[in-house]
Length: 239
Image 1 (cartoon, helix red, strand yellow):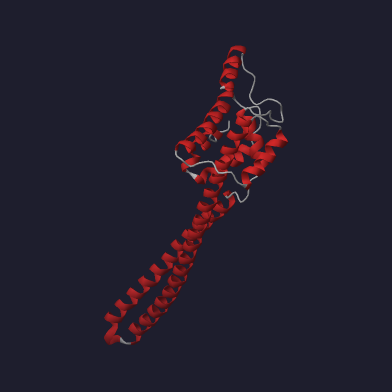
Image 2 (cartoon, one colour; image 1 turned 120 degrees about the vertical axis):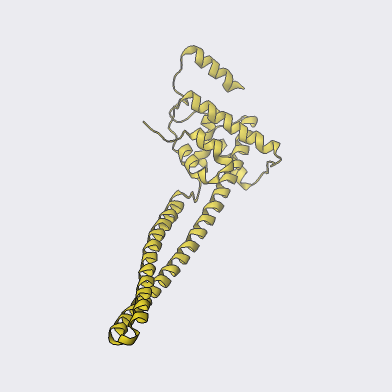
């Protein structure tokens, strides 16, 4: 059984969490119809909710080249009703904003990770240098303690101290290498998740099918329902 969150779960958190955009986008364009009625109703509700919230918050709806291009996509799908085109355009502009926020957050994370890796490698070089220097000095001190008997106690203490410092430096080096592997893993994950470009034609097609403005390629948007539930769903769809 698939334990991944439903597409609507990602969408519900998307406005405040741009890092979720890749999960929602890839889930949306990869959505295979028909899907469960409860899921499609939830997605429809969330689509309308984010548009209404944007309008109420005064974010506005700016016509742009992007919106013009999406209108061409709607023409290809045969979406003719003005309210449907307006609503879908508003939603797509918001999605464009989410994608922009995601790219900015992703780029900021990448920059921070590269900086952390540079600092880590500098610290590794320093620990390696200190460890070698202290180890070499510990060997000289130990040899001096053996050859210069009047000063044995002092030099032996110095040799022990230098040996401890050398071992501590090499232990720190091991810790830094583990941290480097962790940072590299995070960096690979950030670049793997990043959505560099969006297939807007697929987004328009899938969103229009979810909203009931057009039929998906398979011909059915949701799985068959008992007759009573089907009529209830049809009434909701007309709202």
